[in-house]
Length: 380
Image (cartoon, rainbow, N blue to C red; front, side, top):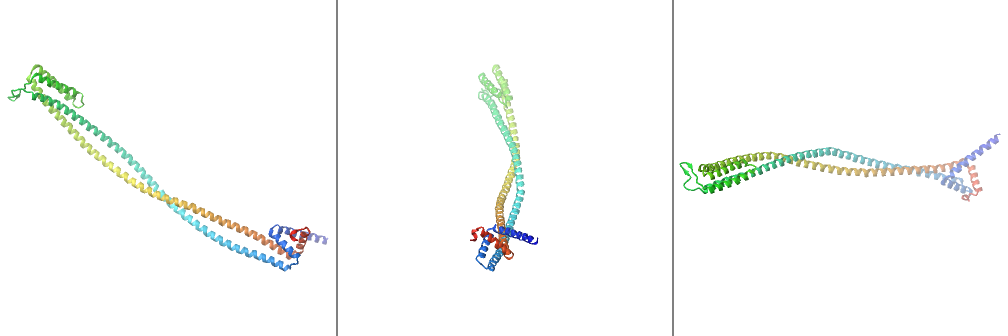
């Protein structure tokens, strides 16, 4: 029973070592080392030299790993310093962007407020200009109306003056001044001429705006002239001349009143338009000042915006630089882990072979013999 159990344990141990050999051969290094050891053993290479070769290889892996560890640590420290510097630069740029945005947040509302004030002033100016235009237009209408009135008064005055001239130029001797009374001697033809002249003037005056009343008076004088012509009444003739003179005086007085009213309107207009122009000057000054302030604010906003755009571009470039550098560092760390894992695996393979040589030389020889018997050409 004990013999059987021992055989079973031996068989299990050999099966376990065979699985280890298969695992070692699964890697290129393990297979190469097994082949080299097998060839060395079949050619009678001293076992000590085989061990030494494996120990040297294991020491080389350890040394390489230490060097790689040191290089990786130094590289990652440089990475940390680079990333720290880039992050600090980004933080500074972000702070600068925040400061510039704060400036814009202050300037833009002020500019917009100034723009609103300017628009309000422009509306007020437009309303004032409308008042000025309307006042000026009204004054021009008054001036035009007065000019028309002056021409109408001049026309009536000329009608009366012409009628008076017809009388005075055609007076007959003796002198019409006798005993303080005016005695007028005119022919019926002259009286008819005066009546016709005044009748025409009265008709034209009746179509005018300002002298219709005088036109009616001239019409009455024309009728009196006709009566004087019919009855050869010297008293009526004198009355006609006197009425002409009285009407001329009334016309002159009326025109003097009209001129005085026009002068008053002119002075009132000039005083009022002067006040309006002062207000207009104030609006123009305010608008000019606001325009200058708005332009100054806009220049500052444009300059600040340009600076902010530059900062944002630098942030974008610096972020890309940081991300690229982080990617390089991460890739280097990954490559280091891969090298370390591969080196650990190879080192473990060497360590396993050293262990087999130390504890399972019989199994190794049998494993090699089995490969040779199987016709493994790598061992030929």
